Image: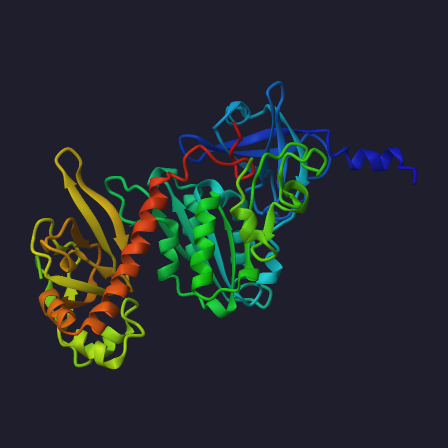
Length: 287
Length: 171
């Protein structure tokens, strides 16, 4: 079927980055920055929590980054980026007013609607809180309502206190009724909170395993141990979702760089239920 | 007890022992053996439960409050190695000679715990190998849990090696 010029104008080619202006930057840690982006033209980006965009630092390269803002919020879309390579270094250093490229949104979302009536357990490790932030915002908003979770547990692990991202949000979610617990691997002087791996937070969280739905994002080793902790406590593996990542390049399932077993993570993920053979795939070695 | 911890009383120590995560599922006679060595204690915030180098004479079963496991370094002061909370046991050096604590354990807030006399517990475990084995299994499970958690932390998982979509970039 022929596509009109007008239709093409509102549905850009998925491989062509659209220009977005950096309207605000916020330093989260010494190497993590949140960029707030607005399209130069057209409506704001619509997306689901957990989806990702391909961000382009023009002249440097492109990288897959999840949206870290709430999908239902007004204002610019946010991406939280860690400065670990050439592209992310360029993105983190992009000054307000500059333009970056955006392709997306790609991938699936957390499906928070399915957590209605559940004890929702959100486990984040390090910057893994960024792709979960939008989901937590939705869950907090619906907390206790017919459409939301019965209870919400947000369990966060970080390397050290100065590496905790979205600290203001954690406090706000706590005030809104979520049970929020934070632990760090290495304490610094003056830290009054918990010290230990994030899985230890499961012990003190009073969720009911029989009605728990869990979502998690962070280093895969952390997620494997967290999944075991949840399953050992009686949580149904099919009600646990994880966000996986591999080397995303095209974002639309063409290039195959992000293949994991039968899945292309950019197309079929990045979020998967733990059932359906994921246990074996998480133990798969890259060759 | 060490420091300014204070002793409290309870009429139902066996129930507290049976309900603690470490000993849940123990048969009633085994619970009675532990309870016979136990007392209910309250510890003020900031007080030490264990002190490095001191005799390891007590197993604490935390009921409320959190405790930090610490080591002191001359140039860094108190370094918190790990924190534990309700449902966790504190201390296992009481099981192994020379029965000396390797770390400090400090109440971060008011703590309620069941304090089990270690010498009493060892005597009963030696006299009743079935009980001793059941006890060893439970304590070993905690040691394994802590060892695995420590190994995970050694991996420095939140370092810069992983990720793309979660905000990082493959090198």
